[in-house]
Amino acid sequence: MRTLMVLFALTLAATTRAAPVSAPPTGAQVDFQGIIARALSIYVPYMAARGVTLEFVQSHQHGITGSGNRDSETHATLTVDDGYYTNPKITEDGFRFMVCHELGHITGSAPHMEAPAMYDGILDDKGDVPISAEGQADYFAAAKCMRQVLAGQDDVAYVRAHGAPRLVAAECSQSFPDEEGAALCQRIMVAGKNFLDSFARSFPSSFDAQDPARPPYSLLGEHPPAQCRLDTVVAGALCPVDKDAPVDPYDPAAGFCTSKNFPQGARPACWFKE
Image 1 (cartoon, one colour):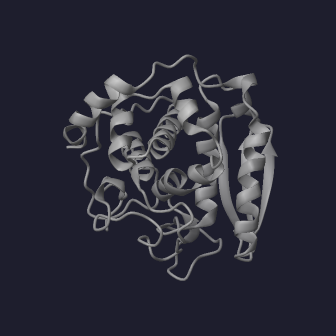
Image 2: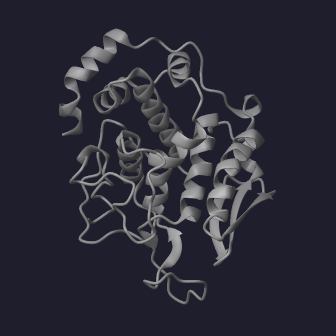
């Protein structure tokens, strides 16, 4: 259905989109520490306003891992392993998305992660772990955090330089008629796909597919399948709700798209049950 909706826009995009002139920056071309510092400059005060101290920890295990944890009611930790800095798969925007995903856990917008068996850490008022579920962390990264960390950049020039798949350009043009909004949407989608593709193991996903699964309940205690995660990235990038609209730890609708106000940008049913 998603492909059918964009046939006209895809034809238009094919006639207007400039060819990429270079691959997105990777490896030594990327200012990893600058990306982290930019994200922290936004989310350290954001969490402080909510009574939580956010700390950054640099791990040196040479792996491709990151984590966002709430260690206590007043302390949270963003951890990034140095293996990312030499990973040839990750682009600068893919790394931004990874940081945003982990910060998505920490900011704790609903829905939260289910507490696993034998868990003895802090819980929210519903008995869940007070960090966002995996699907929500992806959605938050695309709908909120990436828009915040990229604010002020020339997204049109970036997309012209590095390109985006035609289907991505077409979908974004439908949700965002202005060139800048469409370019930012494209950039977020491509970033999320690169993040998912950067893992050590291969988890195939595609912009021209959709996860058909419709579980009877929200998947809050596990990672959704790769295609479902990419569908979540796409939905978040398409959601036009303002990046600064307040979110809520218990109301998933607050500050985001829903099936009622903007279905194309709502969390996909492959992991979320409204």
